[in-house]
Image 1 (cartoon, one colour):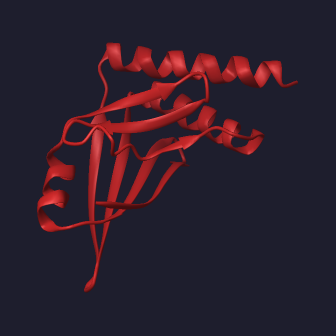
Image 2 (cartoon, one colour):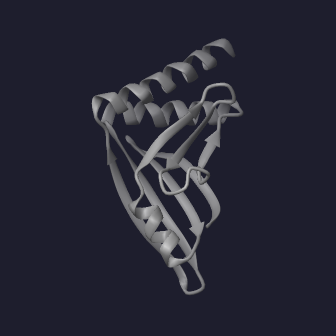
Image 3 (cartoon, one colour):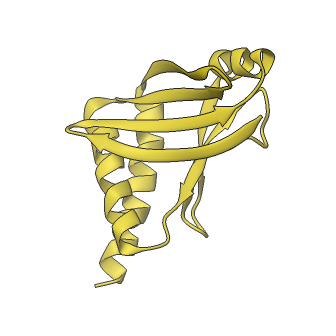
Length: 129
């Protein structure tokens, strides 16, 4: 499976991750069926999706500048507020593109993970003033 991009964005009060891949049918089906977790590396400030079917496939973003920091703080605040986020999958094929969308609802334990990441990034923002 080839990863062409991962975009973490906000649309009004919703948070969205767009994952663009080129893959075969089996890989596409595995991607769509796979349980996922959020991975956060607090040392390099990287946030990624980690898939059970292949733990080396981790579409994500490194928070490496002020714009990225502000965007990720907004992205995380929306998730904590709404207790959900969306993943849009785009598969590039020789015949065009396929699209699938998933809404990821969060329980209180999941929300706490996002709150902890948010706190870490807000502390980083405060230290850069």
